[in-house]
Image 1 (tube, rainbow, N blue to C red):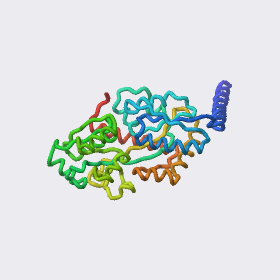
Image 2 (image 1 turned 135 degrees about the vertical axis):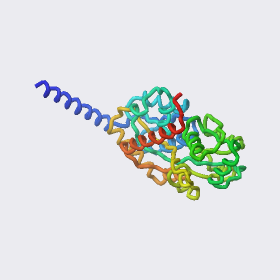
Image 3 (image 1 turned 60 degrees about the horizontal axis):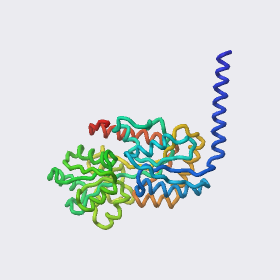
Image 4 (image 1 turned 90 degrees about the horizontal axis):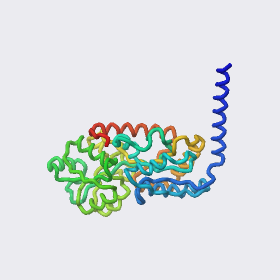
Length: 324
């Protein structure tokens, strides 16, 4: 008798929560939404967030506001998302640092795995390895040969400490057994300015900001970090195909929601975002910066994040980087 009562209470609670979720989804959205971008304006995820916000606002019939919350390697903006109401009205455009931070920070003000729901992939792009035009190497193999023949002569810029660009370059140094000095910066913008001034010579960063300088001949692209060549860089080899198959990394730009957001709202937003990212206009924007979209549903996206976490964890372990 008591067992049947517990079963009835559990079933009633389950049906009630499903009913509440359905009601919330049916009324969603009825006010402005916002996308938190945990970096300063002008970065790639800021550009993609603002492009998406316009189209998502049209699709949902509500204004989508982009709010920049930079600082602490994404942690400030990500923390704000963790504290937001789980009602679908607050999202955040996070990058690869989201799965890197748990390995390099002794403590975070949130749980990277439990406090968020992976919502949708907006863009994925490989890093682009470029050199200043003064470097005599004309291709990736020549760069490695030159670096081995001249240990300590070349320097590379970190586009943010322990960012994907920094970690990929350190991994390349280890795999290729080359001695290249490291110059730290607080972001890709300041680093790029010094690369153009030849204060260092090698840089791995997202292609977005470097493309104009490649076209101008100031910078020379030598390799990409993904598993295949992006269409816009079809003539540039990957590091993997150039003799270092273990080096396959990406920078990605993805939307997350707070944990406990109703599944119906998660699925509704995912469907709208996937549809928008498939549009010719958004596909062109991605192609122009060497990126691509993935029409993952939330479950597929969650698996992608789990795989990325494993990849970066292995890289960090191989570099013997300890949490600070």
